[in-house]
Length: 113
Length: 268
View 1 (cartoon, helix red, strand yellow):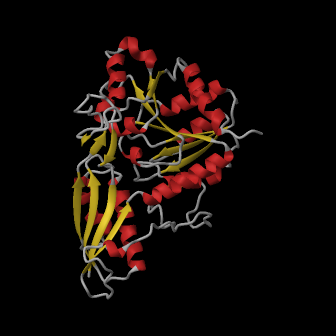
View 2 (cartoon, chains in turn green, purple):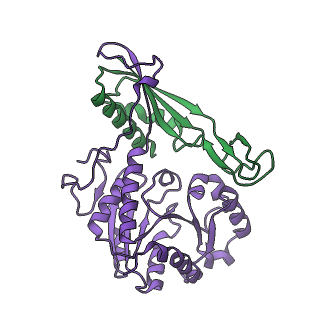
View 3 (cartoon, each protein chain N blue to C red):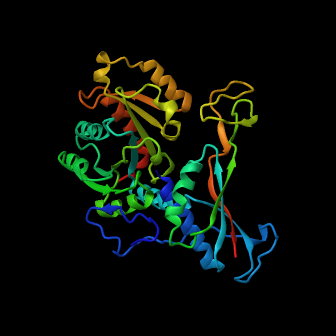
């Protein structure tokens, strides 16, 4: 369950942010998570309350925006959606494609008061 | 305690987190408030506002991994991150390859497990230096832990560093440790479709070792299907069929290592 350590990193980023530009409390923590990214959204939600307790993030809402994965085919250069890492190119059936979006986990923004 | 790793349960044998650190803990990307929805930075504590941040959650780990990689490059050390599910034979493979290499390169080993130093003890019995990291509740090694373990290992120049990750086919895939290559070990007593079921790890690895080949005559394991599954997930993955118990395939593994250790090392 590496989502716990990812969530600790997320809360550390929120604390960094407060040092740079002080605010009172966090209302919403908005993440961008790629469909083929390094975490499961349900696992992140599951551990959020426990990890956030007693931190700046306690009481905040966790908002996870999913990002569909897209990949470029090195053979025909066309870009198409990628459901699984091992999807072949839907245009030319080339077996290996390069993911260009959808592998990320980012802290996108905070709503603070 | 170090604020970066956030892993209060993690212990590094012989290491105190309160000890002086020789690495920086500040590595922040630039922030641009002008890109927020309002187009400007609104000051004031009480005012509700949205702050656009756009930071990679794994950026701290990436910074430590890059520092580890730079240090390994300076020392001419080839670092290999060995990953697998529990029980695939990672430690037995390391013991076997260390014995087969017969001091051809200086070797150090970092062992990651939830508890105990049993694996590091097995490695040390071969005469090689080993550092055990106990991750406690943690399910993977991160680059920060590995950097500290490297401090304590006194890495040999122009040598090999094997990092045996926690037995887990999911979480270690997301954490770069600064290694040159991930090596995924799959054993013949597991399902041949494992690369399809756990694609992230096989996609992140450069070499797959199919271990316990000595058991093949006793199993209904379809090697062809297994290799096909691995190549479907990662068409560039190299695959060697080995047995830690009998030593089968070790020449090929040594050749694979040699082809990468020579370019990594510095001329004496």
